[in-house]
Amino acid sequence: MELDLNVDIGEGFPFDRQLLNWVSSASIACGGHAGSSALMEETVDACLGRGVRIGAHPGYPDPDNFGRQPLAMDPALLLESLCEQLAQLDGICRSRDARLAYVKPHGALYNQAVNDRPLAQLICRAIKCVVPHAALMGLAGSPMLTVAAEAELAVIREGFLDRLYRHAGALVPRSEPGALLCGDEAVRAQLTALARDRVILGQDGISHPIQVDSLCLHGDSPNALERAQLVHNHLTKLGFSLPQY
Image (cartoon, rainbow, N blue to C red; front, side):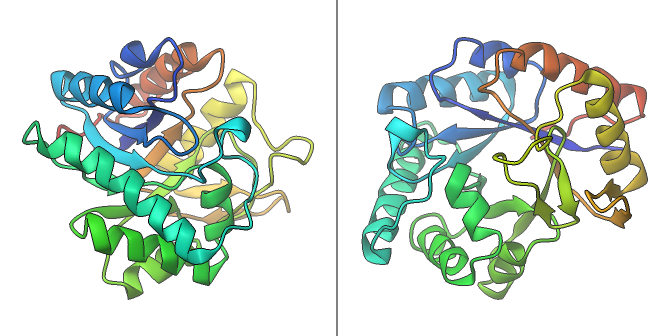
């Protein structure tokens, strides 16, 4: 059995290259919330050297807040920004005969688009304009993926190992107590539920069915490298391997 493991990367943290040893997909910051042209080039090269699938991680153009605060942007300006971010990373990939395989929105943009149909449609429009071959990676069970399917985009259903769920298709906001799962045992338990049992224990105490194609590792936490090793090893123990791209 195979299950993809993706990491948010290229955001300026010191352990990016080591993280690539434990994952199969990399969502690369495109200069909106973080990243730069030089860092994008370096990260793409590192992915190609390790056979890691390349994805784009565009966000609100708000590096001061790391893209984690909603911005009340004019839709036309947001579309322009997203298209520019995607085009820059796609150009770097093309210059190396590489393929940009998917797009995963970052931070507040992702969280809002989960249930905001017009915003999800705008993101899909940016993908269709710049990288129409790319899939949209988004929260498994969420309306955002329904919008992507309606736009005739391929979708990748994502699950989170370190976030508390309200129910399948909805995460507890980071601002609420307990939204982040910090302990190793809690992460192992959620990994087992998502990968093997195909359920998620919601905040309501009910186990909800869920289907995931990829599991997310956050690359911006101090223990990101240790967490990546833990998750990789536990996946192996459950009988899963990472896909080869």
